[in-house]
Amino acid sequence: MGPLLGGLLIEFGGWRATFALNIPLALVALLLGYLRLPKAAAAPPQSRRLVSRLDLPGMGLFCAMLVSLLLFLMNLRVSSWYLLTISVFAGAAFAFRELRAQYPFIDLRVLGGNPALLATYGRAIVAYVVSYAFLYGFTQWTQEGFGLSAFHAGLVQIPLFLTGIGISIVFGRRQGVKSKLVIGGLGQIVACLLMLTLTGGSPLWMLLLVALIFGIPQGLNNLALQNSVYFQADPERTASSFGLLRTFAYIGSMIASAATASSFGENADTGGMHHLAWIMLAAGGLFFLVTVFDRSLTRTRPTDSVAS
View 1 (cartoon, rainbow, N blue to C red):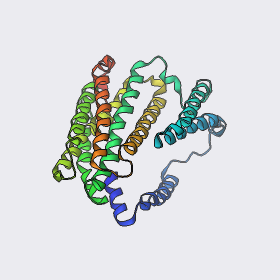
View 2: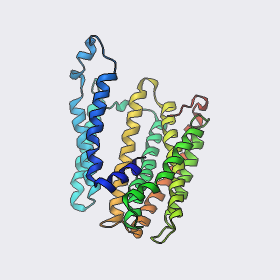
View 3: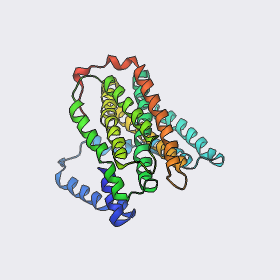
View 4: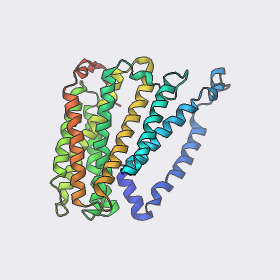
């Protein structure tokens, strides 16, 4: 529901309203946490030593890696290649630190000797490239290229989220992980192909149809990727494995942001939207191929599947 609510805020309060809203939300969260979260009578000795276990060097290197990578992706020019170099060196130093730390910020050991889990993380990157490129780029085009207001651009996204919710409810507890990923991959490809047919003069129902079809991978891929990690991760490192899934997903969102910026430039016109759709189609095709030929997905225990 984010695009719809965001469009409503922008329509009546400007873009700053989308940031200002976080202030009362954070205050309410702090108040509810103080009132409702259970309070321990006395902190155990291990909790008292929690601060000393914080991996501050690892956190710093991780931030340096991501910030420099994001700045590079936001400004893809020859003069910015030094940022990519910084990101690579920071990433190498981060990996060196985390593999030797007693209490690592991110336990990279979950990646060792688990090619099935690595394949899932790779799928997560390309899946979220497509998902976030649609959320960022398609919404921007519906305003600038198609001429909708911010609020109406948010309304166009409703079929996506309603379909995604419905798909999750219907298929969430059904057996099989690979089938969800294959169908979700096909949904991405079909929706990207439809984007290539859109122009500023297309009927509104075509935009709604594209959003509706994108709801299929929105509901299936997110669910199936989490199910995959549940099956593939070392049980003792499940939490770290799910944390890394989110990290790779956000890397996909960063790539999607860069792809959107490079496709549109100053204006989100139809030509730029088509350029972005080709990038999304390539990512969706890679997602589909990696999924179809991944035999490890057939070795999961579908009867234990859980809806996330």
